[in-house]
Amino acid sequence: MKPITRGTLAAWLTCVAAAAGAAAATPASATGTVPVPVPLDGVEKSLAVELPEVGGEIPLPTPGVPDGPRYVEGRLLPERVVPQLPVSAGLPGADLRAPLPEVLGDDLDRVDLDAPASDLRTLGPGLALDAPLTPPDADDFGLPHPKPPRAGVVTSIHHAVPGATLGLGQGR
Image (cartoon, rainbow, N blue to C red):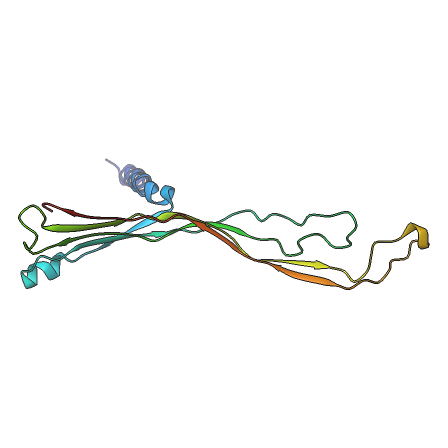
């Protein structure tokens, strides 16, 4: 086989392997969380002690499209000068399985805590301003009238429904 053919074949196989690796990594990014295992096997073997199994999930925040300014009749400035930015993410999740001594009997030798990552939707703070002038008045030759200025902060909104399960079990 010629060296050029070997190089082309090696490059093609590398591309196929990279595509297969990217396809295998897609489910973690598709769910919006990254799994985080905590390796305790080395400590468990070196100390000859049964340790808990710990793992977690870290959410990936994804910004949304801000709702643009809205023009309202009777105002010189838009309703929201600085629009609120929506961000979707999640609360971190945890998975814990810890051994229990046989105090509670032979049936229950493990405690499980499962707190999956839950969705979190937020809407960042915004700013609302109004000019110290009224719109042009047709009855007064198109001149605006002074009025007190208005300024306000639109508060942020957070929405989440976290949940967890705690239980006792048998075996690993």
